[in-house]
Structures are given as structure tokens and as C-alpha cells.
Length: 584
Image (cartoon, rainbow, N blue to C red; front, side, top):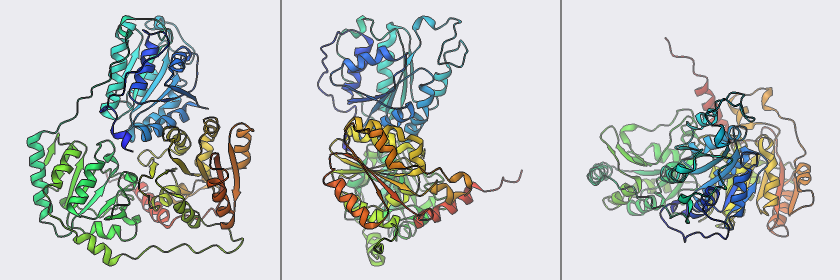
């Protein structure tokens, strides 16, 4: 979303509070508001209670209590995707080591999440005391050491004299690097006045990153020469378009060059699919129909912000040749087998290159010649069990600029990838880290940030069992999300990689579980769906009479009803995982 591109570049009005000023707790609350955070996801614990009092006292900040720390972290992740920055507050060690999986996921996805931990009393540092919530050693640095590998800055605040500097350095670093940070605050410090907190925080001025002009000019010259000689070049957008804040520049280049544009699977939602030259997802052997052929047969391709891992490369099977590729990273451009230019930023490069390219629509014309529209799933017969492809045909019809899709790790990756997103329709999933259960917390956070959109979450039963509790928080927050719970009896994506009895899960009565969580408080509606007619009726109710409620639709599917893309992808990833050791 555009808001995510504006963090740190726009200075909001100063934040004023009616509460007592001059304390660390008030400064942190105001600073969070000043950078755009309006909701903080938390789990209380004795070390963070005093800090939570100060956050709650800030009128422009809403503290959202979550059922567990993992979901609080996932919620901050989802919030950051919609708002540009997110925050969570947990307690020392037992909370920190619980939330750390979510923080690692945010790190992998380049999301600025402020992870705040209520730490020990400042007097206990440097003593030989053993504290609760620890592993029983007088060394309080275990949590810090764990976070050092999954955050870009760590601040342990146990002295008020440098607290202002440590807090502001950590938060500004999160915004500059677009990565999570860790801030531990002594439990006895939030309410103590200190002169450094005597006024409202001054809005950050984050100096813009400016390309090396000579390097930029050289990179553009080399790229233009390379591409203007090509016969049928293509343009492919990747997930790092977000962190590079280069989405508008990417479209500018597409408009100027008239190349066909595709998107890598993990970049879906960052490239406008209503663009006239958008052709679909490039994902090797499981690409959108005809897209793989056009991209891999091109004599030149520009990849803007790609990540080539084993999943996005379908088990390292992409037919991409380095000598044909221009790789544009957030701060570097590499031309084929030739030169590489550092400190050249993606948005600057794409915009400058747009002014130097000749129009070339050859590859797009080739695509139009071979393109055959996708078939429509056969309508289910009366009382025939609902098929997954029919489900997603109906989800496609629900999408608009006022909706957003959250796709859980699993077969929903592949089914949601095939959805054509209308203009301004949001789309999020976690492909790099791929933590099952991510979507429940992320849906909570995204919906809390993007109140103008109705979120449609597609979640498998196995993933839902990991993080189901925070349906409770969604109801408490009055969210209007529509959740499609796909009940097919197990971990389908893992079945297609390597099957075994461990991929079969205990079935739950999911609607009854959600009804129990609802408990008559708030607006929540549930239904079980087994046929297409029941699905049509459920969607009509969710978008009509229950449009202001959280709607939970449990969809029963056969355990072997998977997308054809998952079948192909799973076999290739399995082969990559099963490679024998190299000879010694």
C-alpha cells in the first residue's frame, strides 16, 4: 500500500498528550504515534505492566491484547504490511522467546516491526541475582543474543540517561532499514521523569538515500544499451519492490518501455494487475499459463527486486540465464555477466531507465498471439461435494478495490496466486519464511490497520490449528474479516512434498470452536459449506446481512483436492530437498 511507502518521509502533526509528560513511557507512546502506529499488539506480563499503563494513557494509541505472543508478533507483521510500521509489546524472555519466530518472519519480509520487551528492574543488572522468566542463570543477555540475528538494532534500556538516544536510534533504524528492532525497557523506568523527555518527540527526519550519480548514470547507460538491442525483452517485479519503495517507478518503466510485465509469486500485490500489459505470475514450471514461456524465451529480462530461493525457483528449476538478465536489487544493479553498480537505488534506476528505453512491445504481442483464456471450473452438480477450484472462482468474484486477500502458507499460496486482483485490492502472504499459522495473526493486524478494506483470509485447517485463538481478538476489535477455513484433513502442502502419517491432523469442529470463542459477545457468524449452492448462499449472507460481522466459513474439501500447481511444485521441491550429498 502507498502508506507503507511514506513512513519516515512525511512528518505528522506533533503529538500532544493530556497525561503527565517527561517520562520514558510517555515518550515511547508518543514516538510510536508520531511514526504512524495507532495500534500496539501486546500480551501483558509483570515486567511490562507499568509500560503498558503509559501506552494505554496515550489517547492516540490503542493497545490490542492478544492471546499469545506469537500472534501478537504476527499481528504487528500484518499491521506493518498495511500501515508501513508495526509494534508489539511482550514480557521478558518467556514473551520474547515466544514472539521471536514472528519477528524472524518480519525480518525475512523486510518489515519494520518495533518489538518492545518489558525487562528486569535496572538494579538487577550486574548482580548475581536469578530472576523468574529466565533459564535460571544470573545472565540476562540470553534474550538479547537471540534477537541479535533477527533484528537490525537492539536497545537494552536500563539507564534513563541514554534511554532517549537508544529508543530513538532503534526506531529510526527500523524505518531506515525496513527491518525489525528489539527494545528492552527496565520495568522500573517507564514512569520516572527525566529531562531528556521534557517535550514531545521531534518528528524524525530520515535523510533520503540518494544514488551515486556517476554510478546511476553508468548503470542506466549499460542497461539501456543492453535492452535496446534486445528483440523481445520482458519486465518482472519481485518482492523487494516494497522495501525499495519502487512500485511507482516500476510502473513508470513499464509504461515507457511497453514491455510485458510479470510478477514473481512473492511479489504479488506489489505490481498492478489491472495494467494493460500485465500477463501474470512468473513461477517457473507453475507460472500462470503462457507466462513462463514468454519470460523464459525472452532474450532479455529485467528482474526488479527478486528473491530466487528454492521455493520461488521451484526447486532451483527456473530456465533463466544470467547472461540475459538485469538484476535490480534495492541498492545495486547487475547487468548480465557484465558490470555491477553499487549504491544505485532501485527507484532512481527504474525511473532514469524509463527515459532511455525504446518502446518494444514484441514480447507482449507474442503473448497475445499464444494466449488462450483460462477455462472456467465445471459447475458442481446438485449435492456434489464442493471442489477447491469452484471455491476460488467464487472468491474471485468477491474481490474489489475495497478488499484484501491474506493467503496462508499451503495450497492457498497457489490458489490465491491465480486470483486476478482488481485495482487497489490488497494482497499479502509470507513466502520467504513460510511459517504455518502466520495468517491468523497477520489478518488481525492487517484488518486493524486497513479498516477501509474487508479482508478475505484463506486458511488451511492445519495452519489454523497453530494460531486459532486470536479469532477472539478479531471479534473483540469488531473486525469484519471473512475467513475461509479449508478443511481437508491435514497439511496438504507437506503431503505433496513428502507424505507420511504426520501430515494427518485431528479434525476439529471449527465452526463450533469459533462459536465458543464468540460466546455471544461481539458480531460473529459461522457456517459450514459442503456444496456450491451452500457456498453461494454463505457468501451472499457474509456480504449482505452479516457484512458488519466477522464471518467464518468452514469449507469441506477432499484431502486430495489440490491445485495442479502444488502437485508440480511439490514434486520439484521434494527432488531438491532429496539431493544426495556431494561426493567428498
